Image (cartoon, rainbow, N blue to C red):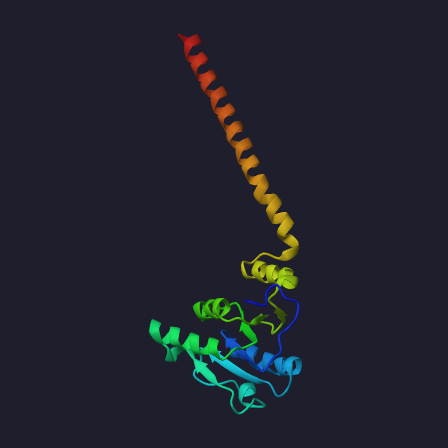
Length: 193
């Protein structure tokens, strides 16, 4: 995440696409990536599926590679693979965050290990650069993932702050009512005797 605090996009010779979600999102984002970064750019693919997307094969450079994470079962082979990917120097890495937990350790490893500028793609094939200027987009994506609508965040926080006061009020009220009842019972039994 070397380029997080930079506004510039580094010069791109090839990019890595981490496909970790539905295939239709990948099919939709590949043409957009070629439009944005150039039609001749080589796009390498890290996927959890055994076959490559149709859009990956069509229009990609001849030296583009595709890796399946199922080929790397043990820790040593995974580490060797991630190191070899790091040596290829991808200036831009595209990560699909399509609301599926598939390949989460791989996505986190790539995010932490590669000195790349990252592009985050959601399930609608919308994308944004992962840098400090797009923190609001990242916040909205995270809020959407946990099921909170961004415009309801203030209301949700207000409700969370009101709950302790409401609970305290109800406990004090219940304590007073039970104390009055207890006093009535004690005085009624003492006046009868």
